[in-house]
Image 1 (tube, one colour):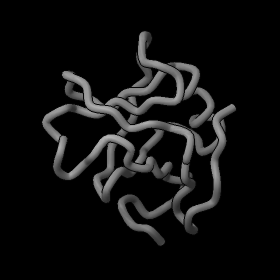
Image 2: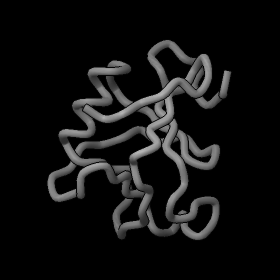
Image 3: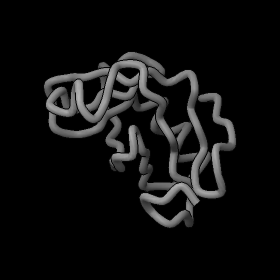
Length: 97
């Protein structure tokens, strides 16, 4: 199970998940990580990185505890090592309420 901490009323923080660029178009995570997040917050799973909101997609071949974001988002607004926030079910999307 992925370690999650309370960040705000609307988000959990996943401090052990590493943000990395890749040459695809979607925000992707390993299927096991997606299942953990879906269990914790319901589906579909939305995350925020550097204030940008993404809907996650599960993929085979993504390293464990890694969030892969399209490389055209690097170095701005993202940098390797950014923190991933997981939107809680019922949260007001895109707000850190």
